Image (tube, rainbow, N blue to C red; front, side, top):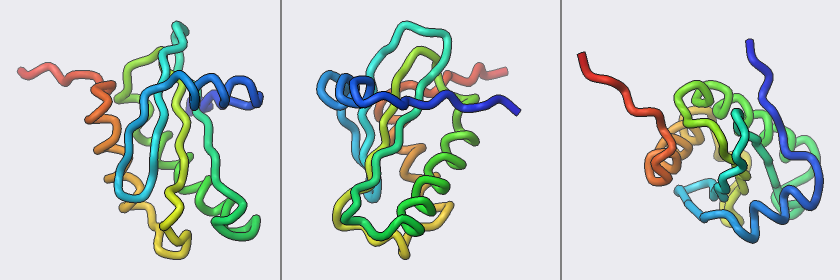
Length: 118
């Protein structure tokens, strides 16, 4: 299985958050910026106010796993940063909610590869 490439440096996050396009779903928000590479970069930012480390890590795991499932159907060459919305309780999140939210965001952003009809 292919490993997801992650944004790690502070300046990389700042660049995507300041110059990227903003898309939002019901539970998560997303910033997208073209990076002119042959792969996508993923960044996850969960506020300390969302909960203690265990809850924040759970939210990151859910976001990362959903992204891995959808990654093959996305166009390459984007830097993507996901943020958890402030009003969302991490206890209320589950796999299916995040997956549907991500699909809606990627559809709005128009970065899903088109499926050729037979």
